[in-house]
Image (cartoon, rainbow, N blue to C red; front, top):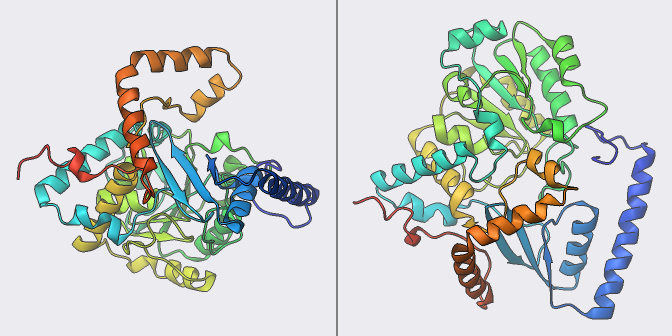
Amino acid sequence: MARAKAAKLRYFDPIIIKLLYAVIGRFTVCEDIFEKYSPVAILLSHRVGICGATLAEVSEKNHIDIYSFNGLNFGTLIKTKRRKVYEFRATLEKIQPLLDLNEKKFNWLFDQVTKNMLKGDFNPDSILAFQKDIVSTRHQFASDLQIDENKKNIFVMLHAFTDFPHSHFNGMIFKDFGDWYEKTLQIAIKNHGVNWIFKEHPSSKYYPVRDFDFEDIRKKFKRDNIAFIGADDNFNSMSICYVGDAVITCLGSAGFEYSALAGIPSITASDNSYAEVGFAIQPSSEADYFAILDGLDSIEPLDAYKVKLAKAAYIYLHRLSKVQMTALPNLSHEGVRKFQFDKEYFSYIDNILSENKAAIESETTKYSKMIALLDFSQLETSLNEGLAAEVDD
């Protein structure tokens, strides 16, 4: 879909034939490589897409260890024999140590992770969502968007349409992000009991499509209960904490962030990295999804226990599921494009290495020892490394 610049899969698009041919060819190449060299493990930065997914599938078929990296300045490396495993996935087992913390330590850690997240320490593109003006009252928000301030505000958090919508590992209810958006919009057109706010993904310009124009959609479908917020609009996503009543996503971080930050319930139309924790509403089918959306006029904030679960998932996914990797540049989409074909990139990397030599050597030694263990499965940060210990009981 990225190659076709298509927001929605079209079964008769000629490019599909080319892609299928490429996939088959890639499988053949991978199988030949495995037969010739008999690798004992592979290292990947992606297990999605034509190159990464095919190699991972052949590895799984041959019961070969897959080492998979994900992240930037904070990232992880996992060891698995399966392709369809998230590098970052919150489970009740993973977050239990957080739930066992006393309230003071837990809240301190949550606040620290939030500060880092808003600064872009974990993902520099998050700054795009949180750098503009905050709308803190429902009255002002309704006035700005010309909607009814007495109705509940349901935020539909649009995805970057070509950002691997078919490859996130255990499926989704709809065919792709475009199909999900179109069917959700049709529900919004029919359901006048709540306000529907469709928010463009802040990084959408880096995933261009030819069959979806946000401004055209905004003009065509604006109603007294349907509004659109563009990526370039003066809207800080933290405003949702003050004016939102529910968040809808497929697998985005919004599905746990606003539940953690403000107790706002989320509806997720796909498997995701926080599905197992239990605070998000997880429809099992299109019919179930539509029924849930039909009842959003009566949706209530999360109870205290589910907020605690969401906060623990937030801490784990944003920070504890990762380790600091000082050697890696913390580049935004804009930064990647700036350096993509620029010789200055190597000077930039050299500067990082020279300025942080001691930290990089220490991390390299530490992580190498962890990876060498027979029972190694993932690089993670433990609570015992001082994150929570900095607060007295």
